[in-house]
Amino acid sequence: MTTIPDALALVLEVFTWFGLVPGILLLGLGYLRRILATRFEETWGIIVESPAGTSHLWFRWMDLERELQSAPIPPDADEELALGDEVKVYFDRRNPHNGRLDHPSADGRVLRVCGWVLVSVGLAAAVIQLVMVFAE
Image 1 (spheres, rainbow, N blue to C red):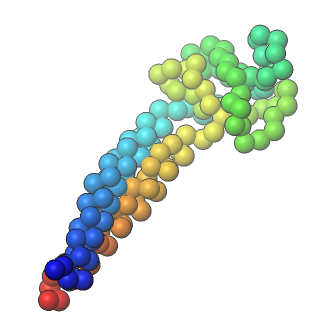
Image 2 (image 1 turned 180 degrees about the vertical axis):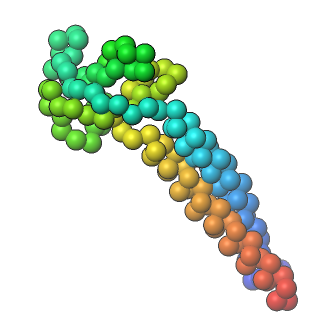
Image 3 (image 1 turned 120 degrees about the vertical axis):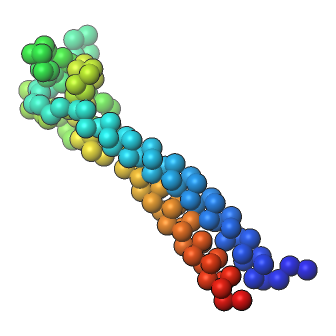
């Protein structure tokens, strides 16, 4: 028959492994995304009409080579933008045609938060396991 401390030790073991392993992986991916976000340059752009003549607005900016680039405004843009508005544009130095309006520092934030939560749960379970071993 399994005793309560034995069952609790088994549950804590599961929490340790399911917390630490995925948590460390998520942390690694989150910090990798954050490192890759440093490739983006910040510049000013302007809201323009769609080249196809649709009602969807685009934004245009100049890259480091002084070439004009443009891209459609994403449907999930945070603010209401009108024709002629100035906006901050972040573009990838390696691919200057990849522009975005949101700040790249948020890249990987959800992965890092989930990773830290899982690692914390895994470490807490490991510490409780050690306390239970030495308390017997």
